[in-house]
Length: 232
Length: 120
Image (tube, rainbow over all chains, first blue to last red; front, side, top):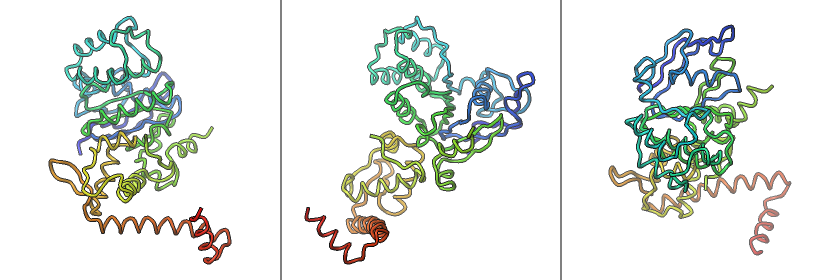
């Protein structure tokens, strides 16, 4: 199987603080992977390095056989944990912006999903509820035909019905040749959707295993194992 | 409706069991065409790769078969489906008998209780 993500000896320091400590990680195509860890464990740092928003202090990082740069950005579809879109734009305008920016953006698919949600494309982003804003941003990200989707906290702060919609969107738009990396605290909600999980702890990878491997080995859910590993 | 899955057992095994129950109870009729992997995964709210693995397992056991272009179908072998039904029922009865024995009931007492309850 082709290595989609290949990380060797990756370290990231912020002054005296080590956010990622010499980590090695390989991800294959065709998996849905959960990136789990408490606050400050290095999840967002790792994601930002993959997306080219932060530079590593040391180490080797490749996505789809390329060093981080223009080629990797064109195959990564990234949902940041905070919005960067202009709230005064209408959804129609934002869709048009994405068509300009990304040649793999599927406009039909985006409108179809918007239709299911009965969100008015002429509405300005800032007029939407928090849950609908999250959904629109997920639609933007999942409407691209990328090789690697990176979703940073996609289900934080939305109601359970919105959460179901988001997970359903992820499953039904999932392309078997792509990989989706989802960072979250809400493990029990996403657990049945994941192939593999990665536990980050103090900038190290504490565990990288499949969900069913963990369940059959430990006799408990990933959520329960997480609570045990990270008990305060 | 997402399928009801336990949180402490492998998801793969639970999907296989769920589909077996759907086959013996007639939710999926003999010879019926199954929905796509993606649709089944979305309905169950589970990972499509895990759903795919569960279907392959059931295929290996002969409960379904794939036609290259037209999809995946439930077996038309009624005898095989009845055997599966018997097997699943036996497993449930074993669990039940175990629980009754823990209550200190003899086999005769269990039979009497079961008959009484079935009349109601």
